[in-house]
Length: 561
Ligand SMILES: Nc1ncnc2c1ncn2[C@@H]1O[C@H](COP(=O)(O)OP(=O)(O)OP(=O)(O)O)[C@@H](O)[C@H]1O
Image (cartoon, rainbow, N blue to C red; front, side):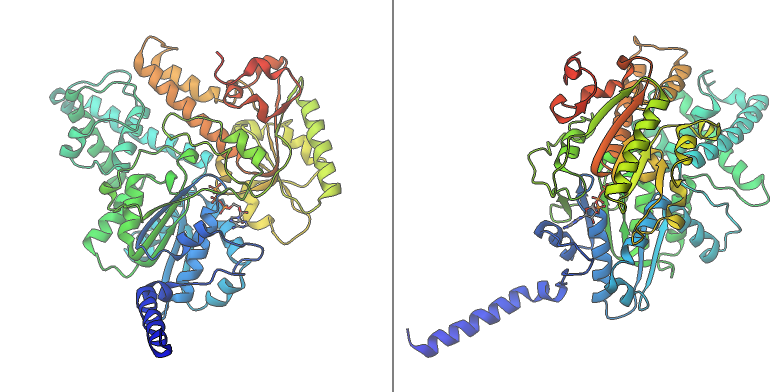
C-alpha cells in the first residue's frame, strides 16, 4: 500500500476516533490520586464518568458507593466552567459529618471548594432551611433523624392525634361516618397518616384507590372506614396548621411542603444544579420525588436495599419521576471495606424482599480471620474479654478504629452499670453523636465508639464488637411485644399477624447485616446470657463454616429447623 494512502487513512481514522469519542473525552475526568490511597476499578470509573442526568448506583455494603459519589462531586466541581450549586444529601447526620471529613482529605476538593457552593446536609435540615430562609416560613423546630429523636417525635404526634380523635368522638360529625374499630388507635392513625404523606396520598381519590401495601397489616381497614380516616387526616392537618402560634410540621410533611413550593415556583432560585443522594434506600418516595424536582441539571442516587433499616415504602421509579434504563441503573460489585471472611458471613443472611446474590465467589480486597461468635455466662466476663481485646489492638495497631455496636434502649443507657460504664473506666468511649466533633481520621489514637446499629449507616471501623447477639435483641423483643400488644397477644392463626411478624424479622436481619458490614478487619459477635442456647435465632442465617465459636455450632446448621 503506498505510503500516502496509508497516512491519509490513519489521519481519517484518527479524525473518526476523535469525533466518535469527542463527547466522552469532553466529560473525561482523571481519577488518579484524587483521594490518597485509592485506585478506582473500571466499574467504579464508569459510574463516576457517566454523563447520565439521572443515575442510580446500587451495590452491597463497602463497594464504594459513597466514595464514588464523592468522586462525582469533585468531577462536577472540576468540569464546570461557571460556579455550581451542588447538594450532597442523606438521611442521617453522622454520614454527613463523615463525608465532609473524607472530602477534606482530597487536595482537589479543597482547591475547588471556594469556586462552588457545595452543601452537605441531611434531608430534613435541607428542607427546613429552604422553607424558613427561602419561602418565608416562620421558625421550624429542628428534627434530628436518629432513633430516639424519631421515637420522641412520634410520641408527640401521637398525642396530638389523640386530641383530634377525642374531639371527633365528642362531636356531632361522628354520626356521618363509619365507626372505626377499637384497634384504630392514635398510634395506628399516625402510622396511616405518615404512610399517606410519604406516598403523596393526600387527596381522597388517591387514598381511596391505593392498595395498603408497604405498611403493617394490622389492623384491617374496611373500604367504608377509609372516608372516616381521611376525615381525621384532614382534621389532623388543620390542627397542626392552626392550633399553634407557628404551624407545626411532622416528619413526612417536609417533602410535601417542598414539592408544593416547587410547584408554585418551578424556577425557584433555591434549586441545585447537581444533587447527590447517599443511602437513598432510607428516603421515602415523596422525599426522593422532591429531590428530583429540586435538581436543575443532574441527580445521582446511591443505595443498597439490604441496608434499608428505616421504615420505607417500596418506590416505583415512574411515580417519583425517575426514568430508569439499563444505562442509568448501575451496580458496583467488588467489596473494598471488609475482609472476604466478614462478607462471607454477612452475605449469607437472606431477606424476603431483596434478591439474594451470593457474594462469596467475588474477589475481595483483603482477607482475614473468620468472625468469632462468643457466648459469655455474665456481662462482666464479656466486658473483660472486650477490654482485653481492645488493649491488644491498642498495643499492636494504635491507629485502628473500634466500635461496639449495642442494642441498649435510650432508657437503659441512662441507667448506671451498663457495659459502657465498665469500658469508660478503661478507655475514651464516646457515643456516635460526637463523631463529628471528636473523631479525626488523621489522629493516631481514636476514641472507641459505643453506638446502636442505626446511627452508623455508611460508616466503617477496623474492629467491630457486636454485642447483644441474643434472643432478646436480635430480633428486638421490644418490637415483637409492640406487635403482640396490637393484636392482643401472639396470633399465629391470623395471617396478618404472621405477615407483620415476618416483616419485623426481615427488618431485624437488615439491622444485623448493617452492623456486621461495618467491620473492616475483624468482627466479633458476642452475647452474655445464663445459657448458651439463648443465642439469637439469626445464628441460623450464618453458614457454620464461616465463623469460629466457643460452643458447639453444629446444631445451628443453616436451614435446619
Ligand atoms: N477502589 C478502591 N480502592 C481502595 N479502597 C476503596 C476503593 N473503593 C472503595 N474503597 C474503600 O472501601 C470502603 C468502603 O467504601 P464506601 O464507604 O464508599 O462503601 P459504600 O458502598 O458506600 O458502603 P455502605 O453501603 O456501607 O455505605 C472505604 O474505606 C473506601 O475508601
